[in-house]
Image 1 (cartoon, rainbow, N blue to C red):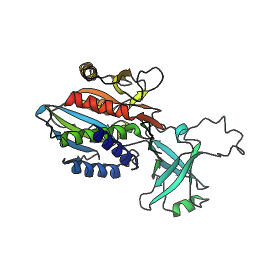
Image 2: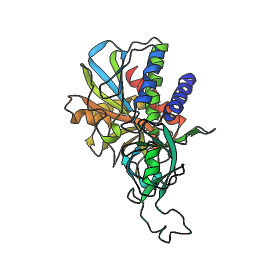
Image 3: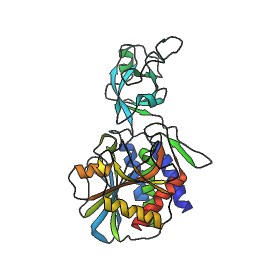
Image 4: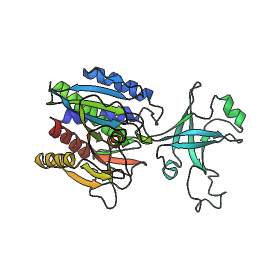
Amino acid sequence: MEEIIKYILEQVQNLLAIDSPTGYTTNVTDYLMTEYKRLGYTPQKTVKGGVLTDLGGKETDNAVLLEAHVDTLGAMVSQIKSNGHLAVSPLGGMNANNAEAENCRIITRFNGIYEGTCQLTDASIHVNGKYDETSRSFDVMEILLDEKVSSREDVLALGIMEGDIVAFEPRSRITKSGYIKSRFLDDKLSASILLGYAKYLKENQITPERKIYQHLTVYEEVGHGGAASVPQGVTELLAVDMGCVGEGLNCHEHQVSICAKDSGGPYSYDLVSQLIAVAKKENLDFAVDVYPHYGSDAEAGLRAGYDVRHGLIGPGVYASHGYERSHVEGVKNTFLLLKGYLG
């Protein structure tokens, strides 16, 4: 168990180090393709760009598809201003309050990568008398390039253009007490747990009773990551994403969260009941919660028309879509729930 958790933590650090705002995910999926092959599997890239892997299993007409996503929040250059600063449009649910004063990278299509900082327009408190009362939104935020530019023409000469991707610094770290802190734990932490589960099956030469697939999706943050690429024979979609932690919810970072309902409605009653029963049987630290503002890859599959049961679990993550925090114990409980449910 310790070796699997060590592997999961290594993988989350590797994944977090690869910029992958939604719509710009080739680098991270190339990494995943290589890692699955190294583990002994035969992954395939979907046309949309995700990674689909068959983990094996006996019962092919009652298969389960495990889903996690490796696309993250980010931004896109929407305007190069006359003073050389960049206006941006958010990718996914990136919140301007959380983006303020963060370092970032501007990834051009043909001319390399530049560094910058996301700031409030006119960000000097000693100058801007309305600094405190200004409500943060991307309409009043901008990217300052770490280059000597003072005009639109200067920026264009660098090869930067509208439509370029802006990736925010994740600031990843794991503390001695086991806390995992970073942007984009949603959902690279759970993607790493799925890699850990794949490693566990392969190294222990386990053939599950049910066929198991894993799909690491790339458009979850904009709502359609899991809307395609469900293999024939799949009767169950189980999204492994972040568990919500916050006021009014039971879950904390040391637990695995089982979601009974989110903004899209209830998850499969039977599947949720089975997951709770396994969590109790395995004596796991878990919580059952209703998420007020949430949607998952599993729901995207149902909305696309697949006739399947659906569920959602994940390690507790605090400060979602901001500078997020989880814990190694939450990772362990999530892995053990998967192991207990699927074998």
